[in-house]
Amino acid sequence: MRRWPRAVSSLSAHQAGLPPALPSRPPLRPSSLNPRPPTKHRAELAELTVAPETDVPGYSRAKFPHWMTQQGTCDTRETVLARDGEDVAQDGQCRAAAGHWVSPYDGVTADAAAQLDVDHVVPLKEAWRSGVAEWSTQDRRLSANDLVHSQLVAVSARSNRSKADKDPARWQPPLADYRCTYGRAWISVKHVYGLTIDTAERSALEGMLDTCA
Image (cartoon, rainbow, N blue to C red; front, side, top):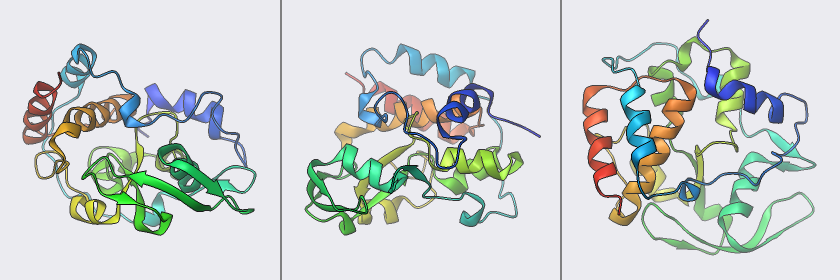
């Protein structure tokens, strides 16, 4: 069975228990990745295996159990909403009762958590097609709730629906200023999980890195 050697040790240490503890460091958001220079991400991109992408049968979101409890009553979605918003107030069940968010994909603002999706930067179905189909359910669960790497971000529901399961060759954030960050986050996730890319995806990612200041 193929595993994700770069990521599994760090995630298992943080998330293997039931309920797991929160990471000892703050959950990572994609914008935390240093944009200058993109040398590291170019090197990671060069290390990714390029392979034709096919529609691997058997995909179901149910094979990626989420959202899991992170600490107390707080699940992964609630943790990301608190991390990515401003002045977020949570109720007794850890739900975001108030706050303000700006979707990095399209600049849309929101004052209610219901207006937001927590997006998997590398969509679950894209990950499935790129190697995750061979993983165990437990490894897929960890990846779908990954707060350690740059895989989760709160965005407008509209932008997430537009993206769906597309890779960067078919979809990039409407907000051009975020494409550098998005490309770096995508590369980082695929690299740490040991996933494949196709040629069009690689070309698109190279172009996104070219936008980095």
